[in-house]
Length: 616
Image 1: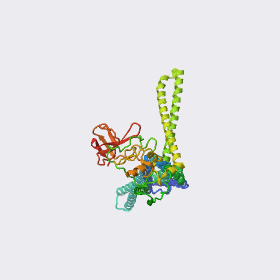
Image 2 (image 1 turned 30 degrees about the horizontal axis):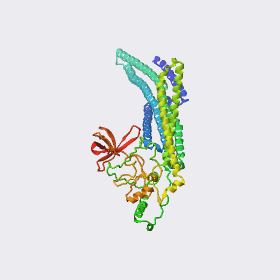
Image 3 (image 1 turned 45 degrees about the horizontal axis):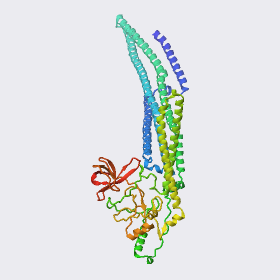
Image 4 (image 1 turned 180 degrees about the vertical axis):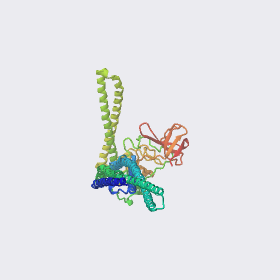
């Protein structure tokens, strides 16, 4: 009993020291907010909170992935939009208009916008999303370790509390047993009927029970000391450390979300200046549109150079014979249907084709370019002809300058090789020099030819704009007809080349019906040819525009054919040609093929000699 009384102050002193240490630790922790001290009993809630926080981080990562998908899709759709609205090749000639140029610049800027959206998408994917994913993975692993450590600490403390509970129960039982043994010994000692041996036995039992009670008490005190120490260490050091790690983990997650949101905004801001420049480019494109400049370009493109028709004179029928009156009335009616290409639109009069062997086609064949225009552009109005010729001359002059520089370079190289044969063989340059000379000579000839075309077109323009020409256009109260290139057709009639039109032949040998030459837009009563035609009482038909007909299909020659009449063209067996006019019931089909001079040959071949495949 005395030993037990000596041990109790020592145990109480240890407990006091532990409590003081815990209080000091708590005081130090109060200086800073800490989950370990403020939330010492919230293990389950902290576990749930950190898990939800990482779920928020994953949710933000999914948000970024969806946004990247939207940005990528938006950029792709913008690029497809720009591609779909790019001007077609056939629309390139309209690019000179400011509105078309502005639209092309708009498409370019929209394409740049699509590129910036792609930059945003790629940067978010490579920098932000990957960072969020990596952070989420790291946080989950660290959280799992923290929770495992906390669980082990909780289990250790629970085990110690269980030991303390068992020691306390043992001590309680031993204490009651010792008190009962003391009570029994007192009764036996006061009972004179019991022998001394019996009293001694009760005394031994009492001593044993007291010893067991002291041992249980010491064990209980020991377990209590261990439990208190462990509990202080658990709630004061070990578990707070785990909670502080969870706090750091959660703060790292929160800080990461903040940095990633700011980073995503920085990605957007980095392309904002470029997007702003794209917007400025679009505004600049819109401001560059000039309606007056476009109107002038329309005039430059479509101005024919023809003079407006003069007033139709009054015809006094009472002073004219019936035949002249009839012809004059015809002139008055048909004159309103006269069509001059590029100025007045009206119905086209198709000349009857009649028999193909009756000289219905002209003999002169003007070669056509690949785009269906004549080499000298004489099928265009005067102004357009001169414009085309000037552009062609400028192109040829540029090629001549380039070829001249090439030739001069080859000549210098040859001189250097001749002076120092170690640098190269001059004969290797000789072939290239000859080829360059040949090409230069060809270009100069073409340039001279087109300059001649331009001089001729300018001369015709001067003649057509002279007062004498204007006077010659009115003869016998009727306006003379004009060629499509602006020259008066009266000259042709004054040459005495008027032909009867009994077989429905064309008034000009170079008729557009055959696709060859330039047609005449003849009016009744123009020149001597008009008088002869009036005397013969024949009807004149008109073809006022010369256009390259679109192919209706293709055909293949089944048999060889030799052209024996005007208007027909030869063909070889198996040759492929373009069908430009179907058989009209006379057994002939109009076809076309490219010739070696980069032009077109057109004419008629027997329908029974070919196999046609028409376009749908």
